[in-house]
Amino acid sequence: MEKIITKEELMPLVYSAAALFIVGVLGALFTQTTSKTMFSIVFALFFYFILPGYCVLLNFKNMDSLERIILGAVVSSAVIPLILYAVNIFGISISRLNTFIAILLVVVVSLAIKRTKTLNTK
Image (cartoon, rainbow, N blue to C red):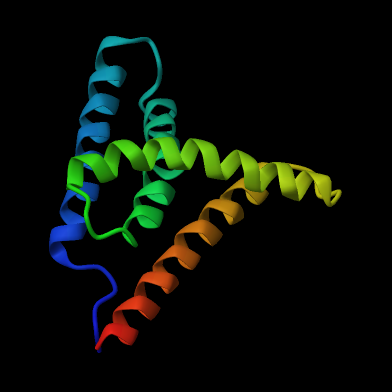
């Protein structure tokens, strides 16, 4: 079975998650915020800002990993609110669950497109 994402494409995502984790540890140590709250903020930042845009930008081949991380944050902060706005127009209230589903939908669809492109090129 063919891999959807290669190790070279996955490592920048792991490095950014590790960097956010370190920021969370430092934030929990040096602020009066509890560690549970700090790690929930770190997870939300990673899940909302980095993961969806990075997965969308995996479909573009001519990008460096640093470009993909930085532009992924920009793409995520543009795409997710637009999807939630469209959901709200259809009368569905915006909640944490709906936001989570929208982000998962962006990630799954972009990885499915990448897999389809990979299978069609072979």
